Length: 225
Image (cartoon, rainbow, N blue to C red):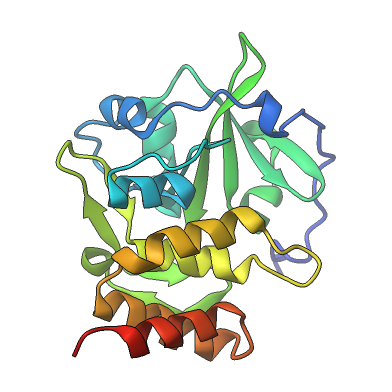
């Protein structure tokens, strides 16, 4: 019987410096130019996606994150030959060629410029089921048409309510993630009622005690009509 990625021993990881000071990320515009007409679905996520939604860069970004269906990762990699990709997880990093079970266990793949030693891009390989699935919660899905918006200049990004859901689930008592809370308060007034309702209902189903729910409820109560 084949062992799953959950039980198969991981190869020994290497330790590359990946803290914020060791990133020199591209902007979404630079990346979109490199991926123009690429034959797969992808979109910007994280804080940059919120800025693409608002049209304003409201803070500095330490990295650039995108998601791509797992089966399309090779298409992205081949379009970016200037980067060397490493699977990244709790134990460290693994070069793609020797990642073994780590490739299936972890979804993050950091692209690195080997001439500078700086990381440039974080490609997250997500479930390849024909719809967007929330990582770790396959019951939370949305069609890709509902999930991806495109700026006037042609940069695809994840809808803001879905970005905020990811950020909400990263907040805990031991890590309040002040940056993500500030993103939430900055973007919330710009969400339309359906987006706000989706975020509130989905977050409530996953964490009914989440601190953002009170703010969402107050915003809904104050909305006109």
